[in-house]
Amino acid sequence: MTEEEREAIVRVLEIIPDERTAIELVESRRWPAGIVCPYCESERTTRQRSYQYHQCKDCRRKFTCRTNTIFERSHIPMQKWLLAIFLLEKYERGISSTQLAKVLGITQKSAWFMLVRLKEVYGLEECVSSGEEEDDDTSIVGGSKDNRVWDRYFVKRKAKRT
Image 1: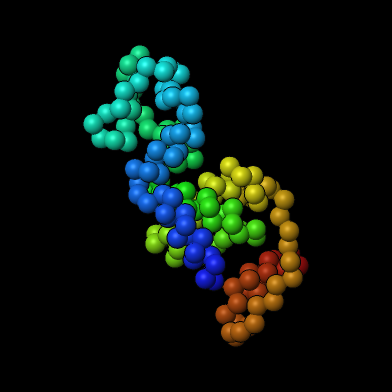
Image 2: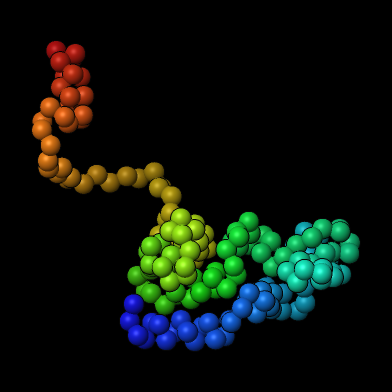
C-alpha cells in the first residue's frame, strides 16, 4: 500500500471516527426526509435505548439502518463497511479479499463476504457462475504417472469401451 493510499484511508477515518458516526451517516443517506419504517413505511418511529435500533409505532417492529440492505445480517461494523465501499471505489481494478482483510483488520472470509455483496450491488463482475464455462489449456507437471487420478480414470473408461 502506498503512502497516498494510507493518507486517503486516514482521511476517511477522520470523517467516520466511530461506529455511531457511521450509523448516522448511513441513516442520513437512507432516510434524508426522516426515518421511515422499512416494513410498513410509517414515519412514526422512535429510537430505542440502544442507539442503533428504531421501533415503528404502527407495526411495532424493530429495525436498524441495515434492515433490507446489503448490510443486513452482518456483524461487521458499519465503519468497516463504509471503508470497504471507499476502497472498492478507489481501486479501478477492484481489491482482493486478502488485501481488504489486511486493511480492515478482519478475516479473509469476512472480506470475501463483503466483496460479494458490494459487487452484487455495484453490478461488477458476476460473483456466481453464469452457466457459460470456458476451458483453458492447463498443464499440470509433477508426480509419477501412476499417481495421476485423471489418467487412471480415463484409461479405465477407454478400456471398458473397447
